[in-house]
Image (cartoon, rainbow, N blue to C red):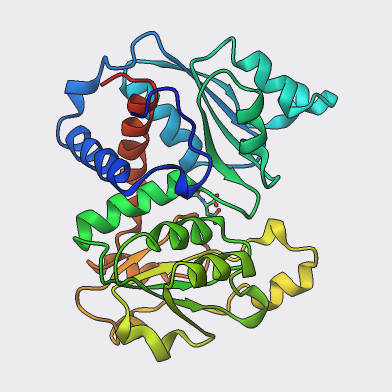
Length: 306
Ligand code: NCD
């Protein structure tokens, strides 16, 4: 039962619930028209305290394609947060205007706090460098479609693993599938946080860390590239030094398995050469498209509209 629940972090849904959600995603993708009135008269509030293109637009497109409506803001300077209103007060009020709310904030724990003050379901669309569970649902839908399974995969995460909330969320969810192996590829300064390693250790997941992408390329089934998260650095020089550590090129792709797929939550900066886009293993634009279908499925389930 999804009705009335919130999605704050990757562990909020069971494996069976994830399967149900991915199945509905596929059904919606195959016959969008059939669901075009599912959320009629329902309202989504999109509260974005941090920049976004895909996440916000795909949530809004999802609600509109389900026959519902959207309200909210894309820029906190146009909301009462700019006057100093607390998130708790904002969400109390929004709860009486909308049926479900999606929140992105630069502050870790913001969505969880919002849930405590809300009478409607809250969806976390990214809380600082912490988690981004709907991107993870998108990643799972893409892996399922283009790779076929989660069990037994070797997943390489490359880039900014310290601040990359999409990495933290996907790594955490992958621990729940059998025989998954994770390889973290980053410079030491951008290594995965200790709390994620603690989770992997507790769940007996095999993982390793390296700074060299070329060294592990041939082992990977999934390569998850990420952007170096400039906005979370305290020191601009450090960002400039690290931003181009990894650049995926057609040359490097030659060492990868023919079945490996490349994911990226986007936006992409320099970390994937545009020439890689033509490689059939590069599925990141499909991944962005799937984001809308996953969010349609999620909204419909939480609103008990299917
Ligand atoms: C990601 C995010 O916001 O964390 N983007 C997204 O939602 N697709 C990744 C990023 O900004 O680098």
